[in-house]
Image (cartoon, one colour):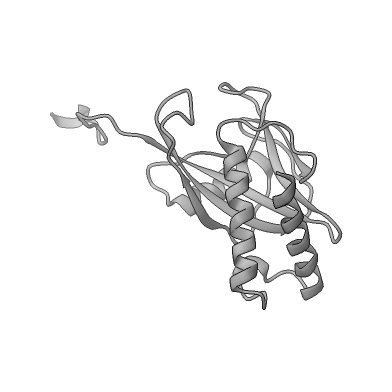
Length: 182
């Protein structure tokens, strides 16, 4: 086939792989969630978690961090994979499997970039309707945070390292309250 041979060409259908980043931000008093306003279809104008398709040469974690930086300017030191979204109908464009990642950061300025029209922090009690299956993903992220608090109450989880014991107590309380709101 020579030079014209495609490196990635298969005779059977296969899904695309994407990442989504659920980022919780804490300002010392209140917990927020980071969302981007989609600048393209599908769901143009709707709010979603930062994310996008993996490049052929990157890991899921690297792709999550890249997409987060491109769409919001945020570069957390630690992200953790916590859920794989596999509903065949989750994306109207094609069959897309998304690997969801979780981050917890001190609240900081973000700005929409790449295919995100805007980026912003939303209080957990004021989250707008979300695109794709991101409401489910948010529920799973809250469950994971609560699980981490149960399993590692000493704050030893890497996601907790930059927070004081008092801040972690407040974050735990906010996440517990959010589970009841959603």
